Image 1 (cartoon, rainbow, N blue to C red):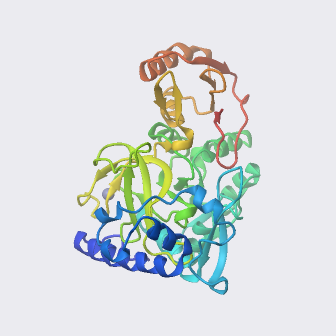
Image 2: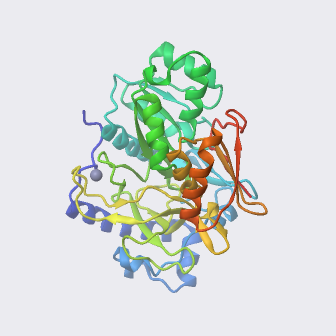
Length: 411
Ligand SMILES: [Zn+2]
């Protein structure tokens, strides 16, 4: 079934659209955004001279701090009458980060999700249970817009009440579960408590996002549910979950929708664009948004370009690594840098899925498991990190569970 165009654009089509949209975008923000006009003037940038992605590097970054300072709508490029909704991005302190949408922006969000649905083979026959929240956080809405557009059976249940989630999965025959990556294993636990074998639940596909999760965790989730789990990236500032790209059906990374977003990877410290293959922070330019398009926005997401060649799956949009972590989550201890997902990979390899990393004074890893696994985990962690963090083992059910984004890093 074909709901959405744009997935299989050829390289030359992508380049043509990208260049055209970039030129249009720069003129648009120059005319309509006081923020960008000032930024360009202060840096002596004539937008007419920015003709390619390489030229784009002359433009300074837009940061989350800029968006905070722009509260409530100072960075909007449209009149208030044209705004149809707002969403809010994460961050617990200071001014909220508000992302306004026009009708066209909502359509764009939906279109990008439809690409994901098409790749995942989700159709009108599916029963789609949407467990991220419906509220200012962008969680549930993108899934909803796309599921509604294809006339699927939508269960807009939102976050929390895991027993009800399981009950509905059983009673309505949920085939597609949309969730944060840490939620399925919580659902599995509650299902077992209720007397259900998770692998016998009707769910066949899962679209999981909102937090970095490891391949080992994926294997554990897929085995537990006997289902296929897809990684869905995206952030509110770029229009919400599912906007920037989707996982390759052959699982060789994330294909980023280059006709809608320019993706650069930069060294988080120097801000210089790094070579393909090298890890760095993703910087996005949204090419096809109306209310608040952003030029060179620092996402905090850590990834690397894997390929710019046509993938075996037929997609010619560029491929990046699944998000390894966020710059905010980087742990630096005695010169060693690592992300919580690195520890998660090791733990999940030993069947451990509930854990906490406490870095308040020293690095402490708390996890639930059988005593027997401790020596093997200690050995693998030391091998990876080069030092031995303190390990504390707890009986099953001791650590707090999460129904939304997991808070596993304690600083
Ligand atoms: Zn592919």
